[in-house]
Image 1: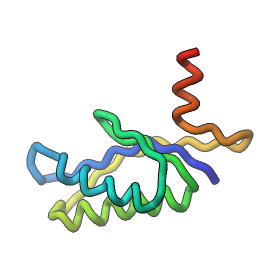
Image 2: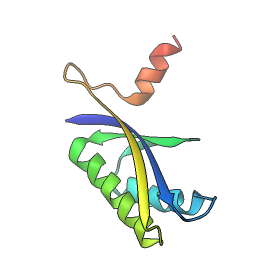
Image 3: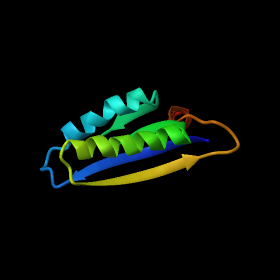
Length: 96
């Protein structure tokens, strides 16, 4: 099943700057060959369900491996059964 998510991962107890932890997730997203777009408060990711959620799991693992004892994530999950619509197409349709 094709899925589009908004993904925000927050390591707890690591200080104010989260950039090193978020940066560690980017190669993981790219290794999964997922389309993504960074935003100021999260990342949009889309692809096949199993790949996307394996990616989320691997992001948690890498953030923990960098010393975060606790990781809090918010997800918004969007699926459709009538057609495959990419997140960039959804945004583009609003601008027409």
